[in-house]
Image (cartoon, rainbow, N blue to C red; front, top):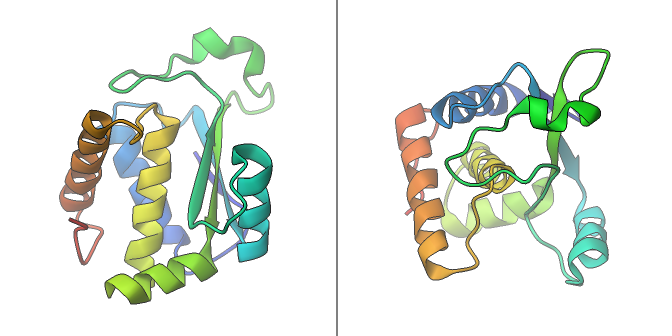
Length: 161
């Protein structure tokens, strides 16, 4: 389940990406919930500074709530104390995207804003599922997976190389 903090022209595409990625990674899209926040440049800079000690603007941040590892499905039973009793869902993390920074990057790379926001969402989702790009080997795995998702989903005009 995807919960977005405000209505944008990207919401339909993001929901389709969300469903594709969850199915692709064999995750339960009915029981696992992602919170997506569109925020200003100042807000994302403040979040980046507070939680990562990096005092600069960025395009996307993700904060996982589980200890998911790559190629591993999240077992909701392992987190039963954190399941929302009203709807039976488990929050797996928060994602913050700055549309202002995404617009700038889309112009720089000559991509549509829709593709840039979609790419940022795929990237952040992979972080929530345990993928990272700190080590060179892990970076290659994550980038290859991003490209495969973007290509196979047929939701992107351009595939990032």
